Length: 165
View 1 (cartoon, rainbow, N blue to C red):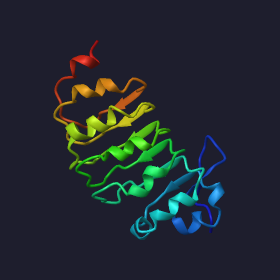
View 2: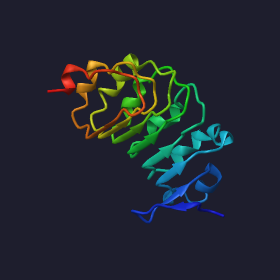
View 3: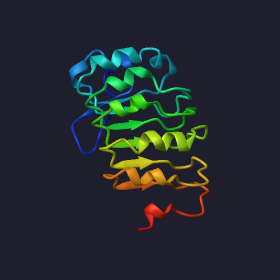
View 4: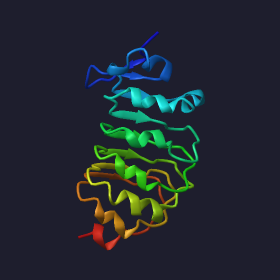
């Protein structure tokens, strides 16, 4: 079987393994990795020049695989449910990135993360649900194109001054 799911709003398929995706590399626009054995094969994502959506949700990774930083067309990245402690500066190489999901990433140093996130110039959607945030750093105001900020399930009690203007 080659394809598991078809998205509702487009005719693009969501591939769920590298094995499936390498069979039709030019047809891979969406890839949702759900098997740890595929993480070791992430070097092969460079074979998918049209990749726009990538999910590594729930993979318990401690670092963002460096192979991702060369995905120039990537618009949506879901890194929820991992064990990152920081976000690398190389994340800024994803110049087309519009949506980033970091839900349930409880080990992430949010001050450090926001120092990187605030420089993602094209980011429109940022989801930080259930990250046990006690506060929101002022640097959030650096996200000039941000349209949706999802902070549900956190524990902060006030918004930064830059957000209430």
